[in-house]
Image (cartoon, rainbow, N blue to C red; front, side, top):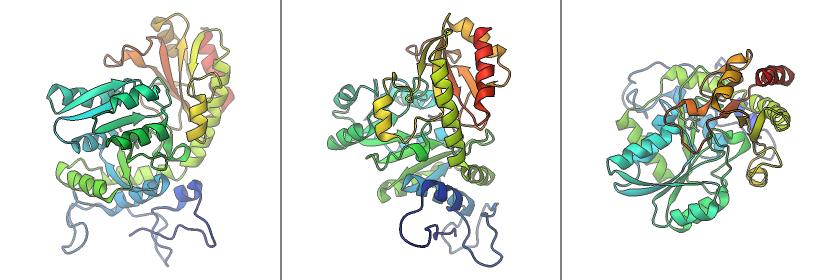
Length: 377
Ligand SMILES: *Cc1c(COP(=O)(O)O)cnc(C)c1O
C-alpha cells in the first residue's frame, strides 16, 4: 500500500510539484524504503485484492496513485498510450458515434478508422478548434474525443465549452492530455469525463518507456475500465511502471524548463527568415493564444514550424542538425524533431514542410544555435 499522507502538515492541499515528488511512496515507517519496490509477481497468495498478476500489481498502483493525484481522479495504467486509447474506445456501445479531431495522434485516428471500417463505430472528423462545428457534430454522438493541444497542428480546443456542450447532449468526453501534462492543464476540472496520457512522453520523460494511463472521477467508468483491463490483458510491465514513476518525480522541473526553452525558441523562430509559420500557443499571434491562457498554466514544450522551401528543404534542415535528434515521439529530456508528413498516414491537411519540435531541457542557447545553423544551411 502506498502512502496516502501526502498532505503537508497544516491547512491546504499540496501543490502539484509536491504531489509529483511525494505521491505513490510507501508509508513513512522505520526501515520502509523511500521508493515503492519493484514487485515482480505473476500471482499472489489467495484472499487479497489482486490474486493474479493480470489483475493488479502494487508497483502499477504506486504510479497510478501519483498520476491520479496529479489529474484529480483515479488512474489505471496500460501497456501503452494506444492500449489506453483502445480500452476507452472498446467501452462505447456497438454502432456508437464518435466525434474526433481531424488532427490528432495518428494511432488514435487509425483505431477510429479501423473501427469505422468494421462498422463498430461511426466516426465524425472535426476541426477541434472550431467550437461551434464540434458541438454541431456532437448532436446524437456518444463520445467526443479531444486532444489539446493537437498533434502536430498544435491547435487549442475550448475544453470547458466542449465538455459542457457534449455533456448537455449526453456524450462523454475524453481528453488526451499528453501534450499539456497535468501540470499545465487539468481536464477533469474543466469538465472532461476521462483523461488519457501516453505516459511514454512527458510523464516518464526519458525516452526509455512505452506506457499509457487513463484517469477518471467516475467510479462506474473506473470499474468498467478495470474489468476490461483484467480481461483484455493490455497490462504494463512492472519495470515500466516503476521507471515512469521515477521519471514523474521531476515532471514539474522538466516541464518548467522545457516550456521556458520552447518559449524562447518559438519567439526567435517566429522572426526567422527560413521559417514560414510557427504554431505555438505561447505566441500572441497564435490562434490558440487566448484560449491557451484561459485553460493552461503555460503553453507547453511542443511546437511546430513550417520551413520556407517545402518538404525537401525541411528534410535537409533536419539532417544538418547535430544536437537535435531526428526521432519520432516527444516529451523527453532531449530535444527531438521530425517532419510529420514523412509518415504515410499523416493527415493531408498537415503541410508537407511542417516539422514538429519536442523541446527538451538542454541549454536554450545551444538549442537555438543548432537550429539556426541547420535552418540557414
Ligand atoms: C504517443 C501518443 C499516443 C500513443 O501513445 P503510445 O504510448 O505511443 O502508445 C497517444 N496520444 C498522443 C497525443 C501521443 O503523443
